[in-house]
Length: 114
Image (cartoon, rainbow, N blue to C red; front, side):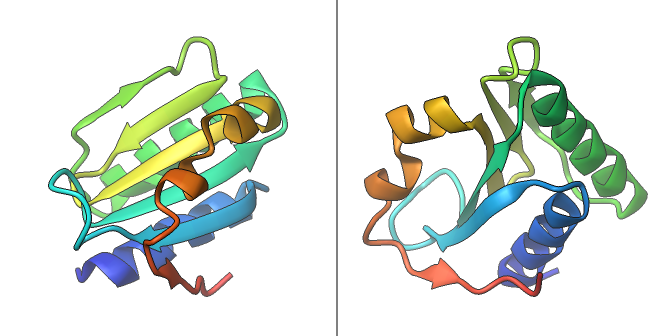
């Protein structure tokens, strides 16, 4: 699956689970670690964990490679690594503080299908 299509699919799954302010960025020319980054907001710790759980379940159903996850216990900032797509699930205050979108401001945004 092409990275852009994969990122749109993942964003759609996040939208289905009521993730908000979903931003997809093409970082392929800027990062040696991944090709796309998704940033999404969660309403709280349990919602962040539910978003991560849903991503992992759907990824397994669709045979998408899962490399790891960080931050699940606290739910403030959960990082899900699906190889060529990294997903940052934030609670609002953490998202504002870490400002991932600002860090990747030069990265083109990818329109989602949601």
